[in-house]
Length: 352
Image (cartoon, rainbow, N blue to C red):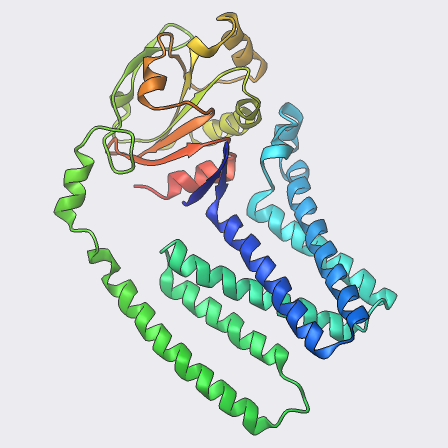
């Protein structure tokens, strides 16, 4: 699970890549339209495409109300920080498509021209998304390569004009297939050898160091919970741990808490632990913590960092700050900013 930090927000890398793909798709569609259509028609089609994408984005954000109504009711700020995730993206795609079909039926532009523009934007977006995922995420390299090349071929077919000679198209595809084949061979070679990039002995040595960086052993600590029970981090060795630092006055902390509670309820019987550390020294009043826990109906362990040294050790300067810790007690990811259920499930599934 990959994240990009933008200020206090942690955004999944795949959504950033998708955004880049959409921009590339619009640029390619704009270039094609400018070469084949009058200026006014180009402007009209581009307006329809950009408005469709805007409607899709707002639908994606708003889909959270439909998919998680209870969470939104508990924390309306979820709409500011979160989206409907993958399911919400499907809903947004359907709404965007219906919007474009409406204008197609209305006769604003020729249906064939609009369909081709949509296909060019879509196939370019998919091609760029998978290419960036291939080199950026370094996961499922061969699959991303196959998907990107499939989108590329479909893009070529969309560009194909009936007036063009079949022989010319055949030669174009033959050259493209040769380039794709050579590139695929390189990708396959890289993918076959990537597991040898870091020697096993070196990785094990790094994991023995205590610290908060990725690959280091998480610093151990003992804190009292809000109920007075003592809890030790190392006691959860053998389980996957999400360690979350927060304060009751923090808006993004308020936004993520209903998501954390639901995540906890769904995973409390599994090999997953959610540990919450309140930065008590940052609170205005000690009683605010208990009220917060009661208001949000939190049932997962809430520990109190009453001296402030644990928050200092884990550098929880911007909150919320969370750490993903694997079954060996090793830090695998630091996330600054609020997380929703999809992000937490993705994190947990990314480690052993």
